Length: 417
Image (tube, rainbow, N blue to C red):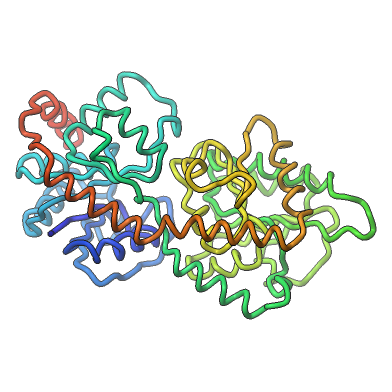
């Protein structure tokens, strides 16, 4: 089976998926732009046919006609049996879907959207469902994403899960290797600490996380026998970096601008927030290895792949209920907890609960995380990929949906204007 898989830009998550797919089909991988406007990923290499439509920039830096011509040329030359399309909201997927319809090639819609990740407007949802009806099957993250795809009109028997995966084996092996270097305790990593990894943008809800952490510091037992307050490590960077630093200072928290093990070891009785900046994927396992728990407090999240990474790295996880992965990955009290976003106190209580827990039950929670995420790795993606492709090949042709095709043509013409 010859398949073309499209992504906007290849980062570590996409590379892991492409590697998994190579065991299922003859893959041609196409990225729209060689650089991502959102992520500073280093170039990754995989052993398959790769095409980049704009090697020197993002997909948005091409003219629409140039974008269309390059995309259609790659698809014409690849002659795929099926095309995997990343969603429906940008020019690339729509132009690819148009090509599929013209050439009578089935399309698989890949999606991690949920019904609640952004406010939904009836008219836009109607348009979206019309476009989705032109795809032959779907590959989605988990149960909430499957439910949303059904809501958009895709038949349930043609929707398959497993889309949201990371390279589990990488995080398992590398985090374990770092722990083996410090077998007695995480002291070599200056842990334990709470770890969060995000772009510094509004929806990641990092001001809320800082408020919850400040409450944690105030609520820490004052007994002389109490263990040290856990620091908070905020991995990442973005437009809200300076406002976050200012907010942390107003809360009376100490700040460090290194990884916990990179600077001078200093006691921080008022609590400390580390801002080590954006780190490449090869550096992440050491951060996970030293952490006591992982925290993800997003206001809205289609999935939250950093939670996969943390679970593969054998950490308990604290995840906000709006995160798209929470339903499938967090088993309350077994490998972590979910929390509401009505007030920081809900998260504060969980920070205290998990850091005051003995190391043995906390370790068991981390082990349970790894057990759960083992079912959401390469094998799950490969099975979902294969099933979605087979379902697409068996689905009725889409040529008879005249109105939907006209609507798609209108969208594509507007994009080309």
